[in-house]
Image (cartoon, rainbow, N blue to C red):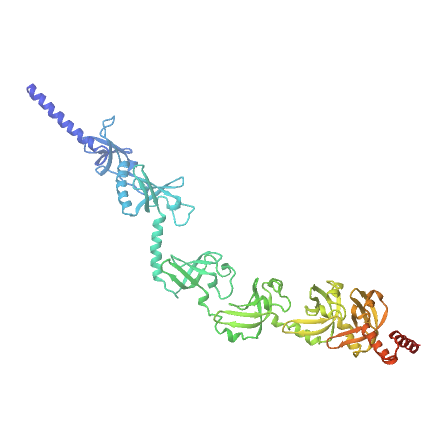
Length: 567
């Protein structure tokens, strides 16, 4: 071989070698296929077709939820890191190959919103790690199940579907959810189950949960609400009175909302409605016994039979206690006698009365205390218009200001009495309908106008001065209890003598009756009228206009005669 030929051969070999190395370098960082040519202890020797071999640990062929039995001759996919290492071998990895392959599949599934299979294999802060056939994803604790679960142990190592929520290949982050898969599956199952149910259908269910307002019943994959008002015809204070958790109950489907999949259930609908024919069973006016089930500010509910309750309004509880809370008249669970006042089957209401089972105390009082009867009672209240006395039967009677005294003003007399005083009074009138009793205090002593007899206008009477006032005299007509007032102008004929201070209390004076109205209970007397009458009479007897006698002479003679007559 010549030198020229030898040089040309070396150039061709170098070109081929360069081409070969260039192709091999292009394969680095990619997944290639290889053949298992040998297994040494825990390593698999793999020919990757590059006139070189690589080693892969057998454990890389296994992982959570998968076990692969590798044997000589198997074709496997590996990730080519580098063509040669320090030992002259290819650096290859099964884990990286699987991860690379898995990421490609996961990205396609994420874009298509498809479910992927994975295995929960470890617990980390805030959640768990999931092997998605080589790619490791994070499963937040809140995304494990529809309801929070305490123990995830049974789910570990079990292949199950997940939904990818987020992917970031650059950072190598994948977030998955098991909860969304369960919710979707549950929603599909609910839709199928709801479609198979009908309103009015009677089915069995299991009580899953109890709340203040009802119980949730599992109908075999979907829950229905059994409201407390649909548990029984009677009043139910709490659902636990009727059902318990885990109990199997027969329920009737009342309503189905196809949009929200909410199902309303009832138990009482399986029983006969006790309100049917209620009016015939409870006629108005009938009396019966019942049990107090609930007390409110406006009355008390009474159960007259299972499932039937009536209301005693606060106004129908007592004849006398008007502004008292119902709880001070009756108590819960107390058995009471009631009367039927009204029955409304359409509105499912019964009005009951408690006071109607007792006699009206005003009727009883009217029967036992006719007008004119004398009663005794304690002063319960003192008002600007009179006194209230407590009477038998827990009722009150009123003494009006005008019935306190015959002669003195009521505003003055009422000041003499105080709350707690015991008084006697006369029954004047009883109004049963208005629940009013009128009493009189002054009537106990009789009417002085009636007792005094008749007085005629012009009659002369003797009066005793009771009190001297600036405007006149308070006087009492002798022999009677009648009092009257003589005005200053009626004290004397002469203006100079019209001075009240001329008189003293206890002094007796004569006066003439100028007004007596027995019906209006008025009597007026006048000293002036008496003097003028006496003057006129004297003029008629002792003098005339042409007699020549003076008025003084005439009056002197009349006075002398009056003195002689008295002697």
